Length: 435
Image (cartoon, rainbow, N blue to C red):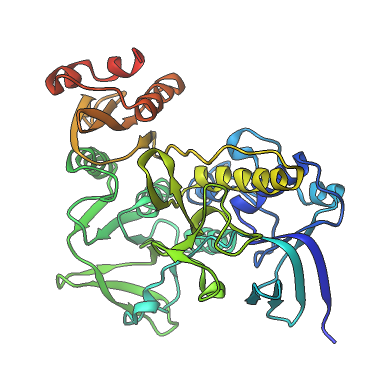
């Protein structure tokens, strides 16, 4: 008979949201034996953003246990011992293959069952693979993805094995930009390929993107836009040697890194819980349509109060904050204390080379660029505002100080009116520091 374990609270998933939820449970006084985290990964929750940044540095690279949660937000580092001290059970290397919300039962690939009273779904996203689309040759060796620390280890091994070789990065979003920079710093010959007319199209305007593309080009990164990879060549060992593009050209490659997005991992719950916009629909406390079942992080489609609409947000900041909100709501329900509704200000950031940008709010409406966006400047500082219905609703800043970043966040939060757009352009960052 396979084992069965019962817990009052189960967090399914072992990423950022899971780690921050565990810390909040501990803060709220969870009793030993009440809480379990079930994760398919082999390690305790860690700060995932490190994988595309510090983990890939040629010198002084980040390694576990250095970046377990909650160091990414200036909190304490929760090592495996922390969980055992708190009586929180970390159930690692365990993939759940069946979830029955009616009987409150989870079943693992090995046939073990786990029952719960309250479930937090923190399954995150899976990476979209080219083999999912049947791209020819997509299962050749050294075609790599990045989601988990295992993936990062494979990438580090490939970087070492193919020292100074040629790398092709497929995708022009976060992963594409951060990994092109990382590979360049590791002395690879790097080409980025993406189908859109410019990089990071979900957020960047053409003007913002032009700066990053020029900066990368000056660093020696080649950029091929408006086409996609349609196939790969491999040698007799099955190692990738070239990437075939739809536009007919062929790029030599020792390593290919693919970053074409993720998919929220909701399959286990299909038909058992209300879904919306590709995620699991929740209220402002992250409770789903099934009482006692919560969804946090990438998988949750929640009410974004500021914009009065349901959204799903794939970002570490929301993973952390949604986790804390859900646990506060769970404990508030038990003690009869009310918890304020989640009121999230969208926040995105990225770092690569010597660059670092932050964005707050909503990138809708008219857009203006301010500051010095010359990619050859010694110290670039430029930004952008989005204006809708006469108010600033979004703000972006490259090269900002902590105070300046706080100022643009405040702009996005308070949505100040704008009388004259030309004036705003001239004022630039000054506009933000006055608010």
